Length: 452
Image (cartoon, rainbow, N blue to C red; front, side, top):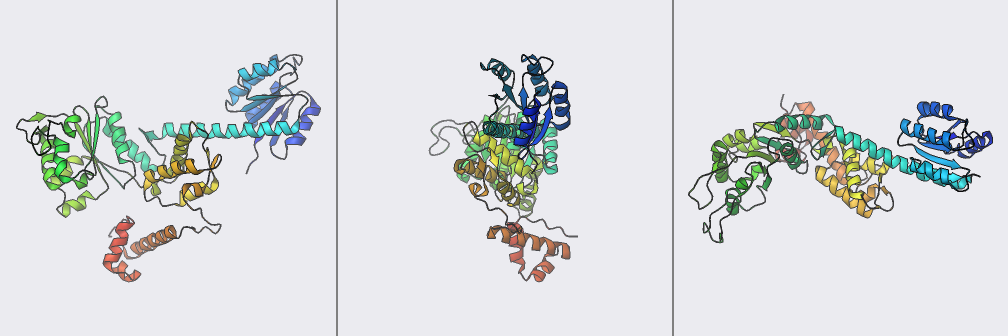
């Protein structure tokens, strides 16, 4: 691992020599005796740390040249930690330097052990600020709403989402549970034509079938037992904004007919009502199911499918998002650790465990594991154990036997797919499995089988 870089600026040669001798073991040391040499080193080396004697030529008797150089150094690298060396017993010049951006000061004669402690702390702060700046830059250029990602598959999601934000077309968002489907819908709404209106979400699989019609369309007083007052449904509540139908694949067929009728004419009738109500909303839907397959099985109406899927957005599983996994982990760590004294780093072991885990629960699982780690971690660093994950062994094998078996089964099935060009019968025979068992594994691991 590369040593931190430090620039020592002092017009006293014995002090420069002493500093280089004392610090060379832990730092890459560059020396300068005046402002010109110091700025040349800043441009060439971009050191993280600087020790700066304020009394420099051509005005060694006061701090004017040192303060001028301090300003130039911070212009060249605003994150650099400048430690001011002051020979003044009243420390007034050093305090003036700190008000101008220096991070700390120490007095002559130099106590090397004290200096080393200050430098270690200053470099730690520099590292934190650098990671934060890098994260902010990456998030700023690689996000849509509350979703972040730099992977090609997420950039494609962002591209489609930005385009449909400027329209009012229905959007179907597909993907595994925990991939962020609702966040995409909210992002489209908040960047769209109806951002001033409400965003109303309803989970079609979380409400009993006998209550679902009332939840969507509302009811009149006395429409059924327990209907003690008139109540607007989610469709009415979304007027002027967006209705988000989560897990629409769970919607009963009878309600699919009624929803289709609404999408065609934008009119509803409350349960028990006689009047027709006009409702102007945008509709977006999401599902973790294969709706086209449900259509073929007669469990989802084809005409409704075409109505809600004018534009489709597929959310990729976290395991397919490459470096996004670490990026998300650091973003969650930053969120959950602030503003308290919680952990700030992911250890190399934690990064390895995060990168090698399969994330069946996707982003939601990653978020929950980081939240857990912030609670359990001792000190400033999150380790694999804090996440509830196992790192790889030195030989590269997973210590988690369940994950190792899963990865091996996926690898073997994918290999069989390639050998037999997706012919399930030949694959099952080759693997010594029955067709139902192989179909179960393919569905369990969400493996795509393409027949050539």
